[in-house]
Amino acid sequence: MLYVHQRRAPVHRKPSRAQWTFSLWLGGVVTLILVAAVVCARLLELPEPSVIAGAVAAVATLVAGYAARPIVKAITRRDDHG
Image 1 (spheres, rainbow, N blue to C red):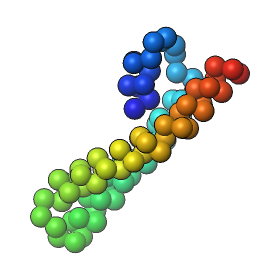
Image 2: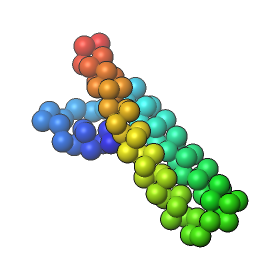
Image 3: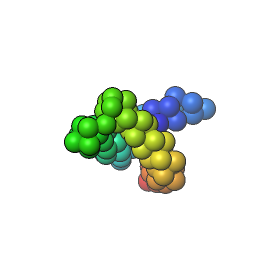
Image 4: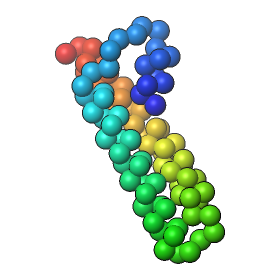
């Protein structure tokens, strides 16, 4: 989401280290949620565990995107003034 935000910005600049770190951390969290959902779906013997896990990961990505928006804005604001 940070990448999309940067591409749509009227002024393009290189992302800071804090922005990259936060993006990688958030991506890791969503990946862990996907892996945990696959494991849980297989343990529960649900039909098509990968599809169910993908849906869980999609919802987690949406939630993370909305939750991360104020954090990304704060990081960007701090980097612009620091």
